[in-house]
Image (cartoon, rainbow, N blue to C red; front, top):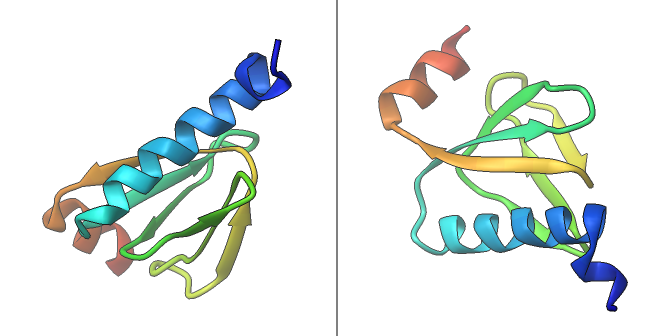
Length: 84
């Protein structure tokens, strides 16, 4: 079986596919590091090789994650998160 379709590889591929679909339409996103549980907020995600790269708008930090989950959020949720 293809190693990308089992366990960790499948989860990374699924997260990448979800981010790809989400960013195709623009919007507001919460990206969570699956290792630490820390959440980041962005409007633009670059993804390749199973990594998500973006600037966290709350801190201004450049972030590069290999294990992540992304979800679309409302503009209000985004604004509240980046104002903190």
